[in-house]
Length: 345
Image (cartoon, rainbow, N blue to C red; front, side, top):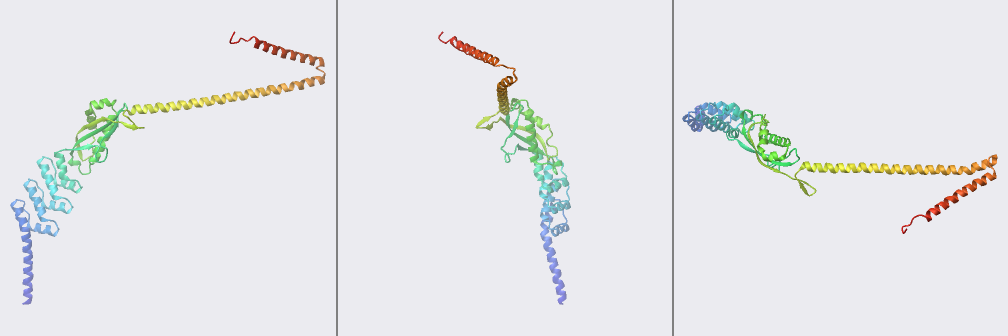
């Protein structure tokens, strides 16, 4: 008798638990059935055991069926178990289908698992968004470029992009688009002959950049590049503003050339001074040799006396001649001073 009671109690508890499960799933099951998105009770029970919310799966299944798409419950459950956002994927597929964009479930699930917002990507594909170049949050808000004539320009561009769903997984992000567009604008302005051409026809720059295929290997397709603002900039230097960088560089180069020529001239002057001092040293050297030669004359006269080659009378005659010569030179010099014209005459 006690054993029979235990069996009855166990059966009763099992029936109660089963009934509780059926009641808990009954609302979800009925909602799926009346929505023509039938899900078996055993499947709902399996979801509960796998810790998958049945209500979420049924809601996703109903949205898929009502949109006319074909996605099985097992696929939705597998995506949830992989850590994906099932509702976001389903809504992205519905939005893509309404916009006549082909987006299979596997592709949408791959985009979602890659960390991209697949619904936002579909919306961007339908309604392109505008990106500021450069990014105002990471820069001063203007691109800095210099034309061939040396004039510095500040540029601000707006890039309209559309999401490319096929390249969304593994494709470069908005930062790459901004960097490429900025580089293309700076390069295009740098190849312009004058800054006036850029100011007069800025769309020429945008067309040239757009034709460069900057959206390759990115998750976006560039629709248009528009120059929002372009102006002549100034560069500060010594408390003054200079807009023409080329003229500034030419001025600095001329100043550097001037200093170089001055240094070369100073070098030549120093060499000339050195040469002059060398010549003066040579004159002093020659004068020393003359004095040395003159000092040998008395010695030669004494030697001539000893050898008898020179007599006393010869010596006196020579002295008289020298005295005569000195007197004439002094007289000549004095007369020259006497007859020299004066300022009053």
